[in-house]
Length: 170
Image 1 (cartoon, rainbow, N blue to C red):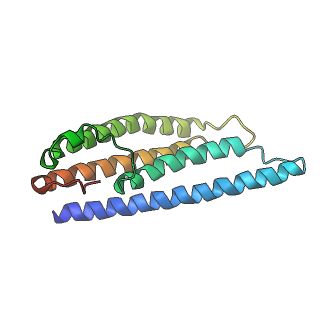
Image 2 (cartoon, rainbow, N blue to C red):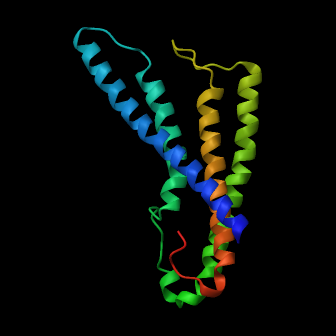
């Protein structure tokens, strides 16, 4: 149980770092959009708004997701869960956590190959910025790994608490 607490604390710390980065990306997007508006008033542009806002939205989504899951902020369909007594809900919660973690791990293996391919080939965006594509792809990959870890920690927590399971496992 002590090892689980350490793993859970590390996971929560990583999730908080991801959430802070996501918030900073929101601030960046606001600043970039306002800059673009101001520049266009004078007939100029950064010419990278669409590209970089797209990268920021994707990165923000994947890095923020683990923190939202940890805090229980994701929309959950409780129609099925509410039909079971609270003591019988843990197998469904465990199953959904493990299956979702498995899906993210599986998806991240392919995404990792894509990042490696983009890096080794020196692939850049087809815009004026010529952004190395592996940079935003790597940020998304880190988010996939964080959500996988969060789901696995959640599954471990459910198994550890299953005898006295309550809906406090988020």
